[in-house]
Length: 416
Ligand SMILES: C[S@@+](CC[C@H](N)C(=O)[O-])C[C@H]1O[C@@H](n2cnc3c(N)ncnc32)[C@H](O)[C@@H]1O
Ligand code: SF4
Ligand code: SF4
Image (cartoon, rainbow, N blue to C red):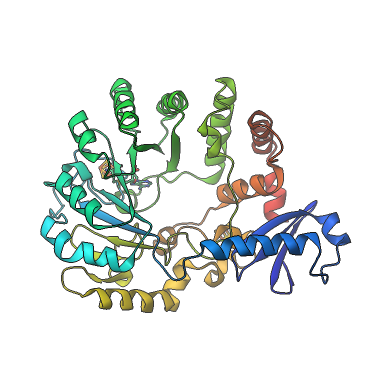
C-alpha cells in the first residue's frame, strides 16, 4: 500500500483502488490508466471523480452520531435456537427481564430523542412475547422521529398484530431457519406486504441447505430481501462451543447458492444482492460509534453482540442521559476498545491489503478470542473489487462468481 497525498493506493494487477481515509471514499481505476495520469494535476479525471465523491459524502455525513439504537425489549423467547446470541434458549438459567412501558416513557424516549438515531431496531429475545409489545411500539412511534424496524421469529404474528403495526413500523425482519410451515410464512409475507411495510427475511445457516433452498424460492417469489448469516461465536453459540463454519465452507455455500439461483432463473430478483456489494471504506467493525444497545435489564452497551461490563456505558434507569453519552464518548477513545474494534490497532490485520475496506472483522469474535478466519470476507471483497462488472448482467456476473469460487482465483489476490 502506498501513499499519494493522503490517499492510500492498493494495486491488484489491472486495477488500483484509491482510498481517501479522511473522507471515507474509495474508487477503483484501471492501473495503466492511472499510471498515465498526471496525479499532480488537480483537473485530471481521477482527482475530479474523488472530489465528486467527497462532495456527496460530505452532504450525507453525520458527524459523531449514533445511526442505530437497538432496544432488546425482552430476554424471553418462544423458541430455543441452540446458537441464540442473547441466550434466550437457556430458559432455566434466564432471569426474566424486559423494558417496561414505564421505562420507555421515563427514560428510553428522552434518551432516543437526545441521541437522534436514524433507525431503531426492536429485538430481543422475541419482541412479540413482551407483555405490552403493541403499546410499546405505539408509544415509541408517536414520540420519536426515527425509522422503526422489528426483528422477530414470526411465529407469534397474526393479522390482528400486523394491522396494529401499520403506520408505526417501517420494516419487519423475520428469521426463517426454524420454519416448518412455509404456507404460514408466505401468508405473513402477504399480510405484511398488503399492510405496506417492508419485509426482510433472514436465515442462519447451520448445515440446513434444503431449508435454505426453500427460503430462496420464497424470497424469489415475492422478490424481497434476504440476509444469509452464519452462526457467530456469541451468546449460547459461544458457551456451548457450537461449530463455526470456516471460510472454505462459506465460499462453497455461496457458490452453491449462486448455482441454484442460475438454475432456477432467479436472476432478476433481489437474491443477486447476496453476491454483489458496494465497497465502502471501513476503518473499524461496522457498529463502533454508530450503535447503542439497550438490553432488557436497562444496561446500555456499544455493541449488540457484547453485553460485557467493560463495554457498558451505564444503565438507562440509574444514569442520566448526559452521563451515558459522556461515558460512551470516553469509552470510544480507550485503547482497549480500539484494539477490539479498529483495524489500525489489530496486529493480525496490519499487512492486509484490504484492511480499510474490511475494517478488521467482528469485534465480538476478537473479544472472545475466536480464531480469525477472514478469507470468506476477503474473497467477497476481492470478487466485488476485481471481478464484478457493473456493465454485465446478473447472469454473467454470477457465472464469473461461480468460476471465481471454483478456481480459487481469489487466493492469489489475498496473499499477493
Ligand atoms: C437474537 S434474535 C432476536 C429476534 C428474534 N427472536 C429473531 O429470531 O429474529 C436476532 C437475530 O439474530 C440471529 N442470531 C441469533 N443468534 C445468532 C448467532 N449466534 N449467530 C448469528 N446470528 C444469530 C437470529 O437468527 C435473528 O435473525
Ligand atoms: S435467535 Fe431469536 S428466535 Fe432464536 S432463541 Fe434467540 S431470540 Fe429466540
Ligand atoms: S480481511 Fe482479515 S486481515 Fe484483512 S482487515 Fe479484515 S479481518 Fe483483518
